Length: 157
Image (cartoon, rainbow, N blue to C red; front, side):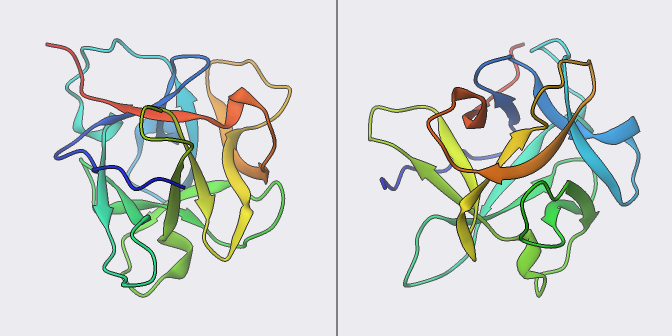
């Protein structure tokens, strides 16, 4: 596991394989599941972007909170169980379900997985077998599959 510098400011969280990015379902400020959505890489919609906020921890420098740039809501995992949906909940600094582990394979690797710290074998991924425009996001077991890889990207101007 490699520690890489986190991006500053709002970023698109882009699925490495499809090029789609994570966005709140129905782009609403409510407790809904997040999904993959295709928008122009030039989007400036704050609700489509995320801030990667480091969590102070002497044991692990890879822990982050992933907060929406438009609303005070974070990517949240209510239960660390296989196929559990990733939701969009009000930010709560005491909620361990809002803490994520970013894992890069190497220093030259742009892609990373977003893992559950209490069960690092569970990683964020699009729901298997779905290729629809608004593919739900859930956690699945880590494996050698490219659909589990993400990257952050600053929107183009």
